[in-house]
Length: 447
Image (cartoon, rainbow, N blue to C red):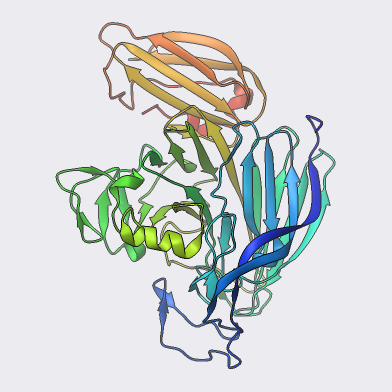
C-alpha cells in the first residue's frame, strides 16, 4: 500500500466460535453477589449462564484500519473490542491474538473472551462485552481515519464512545474515549482498557522506573516491586523474587502501580526482542495494572478454557481517573469526560525507562560504557541528544530515527562516573525545543 495512506474497510470474517446458551428470560433484578469487589447488580441486562461445548465457523462483521506500520481489526458485534493488532514492521501481533471465540463465564453478565483489547465501563468486564454496538467511520483532512464504536449502556443510561484512529505516518493506535451522562442524576463509572499480551518464560512487564510498590485490588495488600520480598496473594516470595517476570508468579495475581509520574506501562518479550507499550497522560490515566492466571497447572487450565491453541496471556490494564480497582469515578448530570490512550509496538529496546507516543528511550550501563537506544513511532529527524555526568556534558549529537531504524549509541563514561546500576541523577537526555514540547518527561533523569 502507499506509504502515506490509511485504509479503512468493512469485511465479513469467519472465526471458529463456541456458542452460548440463551439469556435467562427473567432479568436478575436483585442479587446479593459481589463482582470484582463491587456490586454484581446487572439489571436490566440479560444474564447467560451456559457455554456450548462444540465450536462452529461463524461469520462476524469486522472493521479494519491499516497504514504502512499497523493493521487493526475491530469487532463491533463483540462490544467493539480490538480483536487483532498487527505490527507490520516486526511481523507480529503486538496484542494477544486469540484465533477462536471461546467464551467462559467470567463476565459480569456471563460470556467473556480473552485476547485483543477490551474496554471496561461502566463496570468491570463490561456488561455489554459480548453484545453488538453501533459503529461509524470518519475520514479526516490530515489523512487519518477513525472507527467510532458507541452504545448507551442499560444500567445507568450513560453513553460511551471509543474512537480508534490510525495516522498516515504513525506506528501507534490512538484511542479517544468519550463518556456522557445523559441523565439528571450523578452516575458512577470506571474505564479500564484491557489489552491482552502473549506470554512465556521470557516475558517481563515494563513498569516505569519510579514504581517501587504495587497494590492489590482495593489496596488490601501491598508488595515491593519489581523484587517482592514478602507474602503476596499467599505466596512467599522471600528472600526476593522478580514479579515483573511472568514465570515467577504461580497463582492468579493482580498488581497495580502505586503512584508514577510517567505516562507509560507495557511489556517486553526477551526472546523475540519485541514489546507493547501503552501511553497516556498520567494525570488522567494513572491506572497501571498486570493480571495473570498464574504460571502453574491452574493457569494452564484457564488457558484451555479460553483458547484452543494460542497459549497463555496476561492482561496489562490501564485505568483513567483511578489507579486501583474497583474504584469508581463520577459523571455529574449531563457531564462529558474525554481522554486519549495510545497503544504501540516496539522492538529491540528491552525495558523502557521513558516514553511518550512519539519516542521511547532505553539506557544500560555495562562496565564503563553507557548504551542508549531510541525508538520512534514515526519519522523523527534532527533530534538532539545530550548526556551529562555529574553536571558535565560528555556527549552531544543530532540524530534521526524511525520505526524502521532504531537509533543506538555507546558512550564511554569518564573516570569516576557511577557504575551500574545507573543512578537516577547520573544522566539526563535533553531534546530540541520542538521535541521537548512533546516529551516533557524525557527531561527526567534516566534510571
